[in-house]
Length: 378
Image (spheres, rainbow, N blue to C red):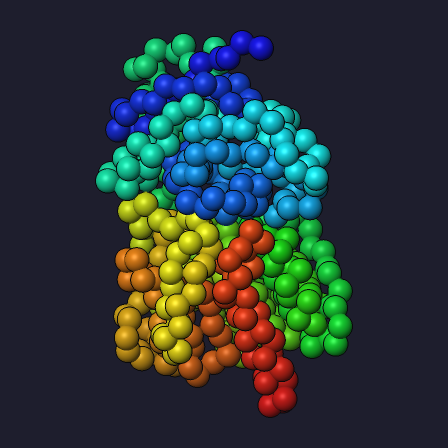
């Protein structure tokens, strides 16, 4: 089989020539790098990666193929895929096919055979930026035209992608073991493992679409509310901020992950901002301020909450005292919020990461305890 050409073009004009991988054609998105050495299938199917061309820093990808057990959603969400060395064979007893074939089947345009270390260094130095992958016949488009198409593509800043990734209709999972209560999960790009962990803590899990109103949410009579991870700019999600403020005023226990952490920050009155190149991978060190314990955690975010670290502050939106509960040890970015006068907390990273690590899995237990405590006070 002939090897088709491909090229990755960044909006600053940088070009990387390689080989077509996956579907042929052209695709555009924000080019980001992910540092995980395992879990590529979970990465590809994580809705938080919608709109992004993902560069894998691990050099050899596809060894274990794909299977029917590891996907975090019903489809691949990345806008494009960049790898150095795609595996030529599949070797795993659970495999149902190859990664290359899956990318073709889901029309995901990718590129292989390029120096992904060089791409990563470029993104670290200049910051993440828009890009495009042109493969097969499209690799032959004039360089000037390719760059023009990249510069015309959408920017992640100001982009709301919730409607793209959220469920259209609500659905439920029953509680496992001793029932604690019901939790309404706002689907902003929720992962399957999140729902499993909540159900395993005794919650009837009711997943609701991102279009739900406060009245509709309260009509389901939840004992608690959860906001999921998801893609896009939290600054473009005013409707979800207003929804969350209504939930907080009702006194319902709240837990948010990733995008949910950014929305809690906004609901409490803090701002958000875009990171130069974000945190993506399964090896980010985060310190729990209360205990001093360092956790190795999984991340996927390009935005962060702008809140004061090392002090208790009053919520600018009037929800009482707030503290930053977790901090990234690499760059001092806010990684968690804890409201002291209302039952609400959140983290920026992923305690549910199926590929690991599982250092932060206890946060689901903390949420369960918060809900039980709130019910005992009634």
